[in-house]
Image 1 (tube, rainbow, N blue to C red):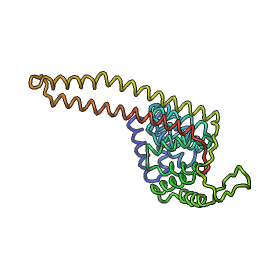
Image 2 (spheres, rainbow, N blue to C red):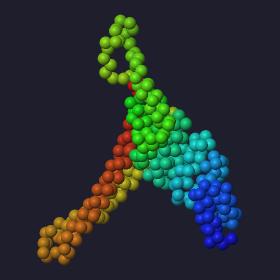
Image 3 (cartoon, rainbow, N blue to C red):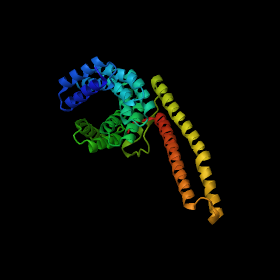
Length: 317
């Protein structure tokens, strides 16, 4: 079958899928693959159908094929990681999703699914970090707020749990799990807190003013240490790259633009190039330099936030 006919089959299958004619769409995609085994569009369609039908082994097979056919597409790795989560293979999911993030550091979906995998692997601190990054990249991702809230409940931080449940509901009012979680968190926050009295019955605890909560630090597991090292390595690599790019841009673009602007201003009317043109070049270079600095600052802040998160003790509020 010619390439044109294969494309036509896929387009027709896409139309059927949009009209919820899943059976017809599936048959058309399969015909396309029979004619052209490496047809990425057909594998994409069949992967989507398998996911809808909760046929996760088939979905995994098609998404795995897509990662080979289109290795530069991070979305295939993200989808594959999500499927591994559905299959309960969380270690594989985390591995695949980290690869997706390496290819596309702005994929909120990849961070969100990584959070799911890490939580299932009992890497709660890492999962919190992943959910926060997903929210930073997509501030309206209701499910990320909800899952982050659940982790706060798990660590008994009810104020932060309530805040995140409310954000989830704000962006998805019909999210029933968030409503239920909010109710439970609000109820738990109203429960009297037990105060530990180190002096036994000699002290009236009712009159004590508790100035700070007792914190207990938690050792990271081997898996969390590995994830931490990988995350720090990625951030350090990004910071090194951005630093080099900034210095290179400073030497090759901004510094010459400044010197040219100074020279033109000194020459005045004798200048060979109009001042307005030189000023425009300088402004463009300065704007680009500011963006370089912003990117570098963001990465430094990410590194600092990650360090604070890893070193943060578990707090019972």
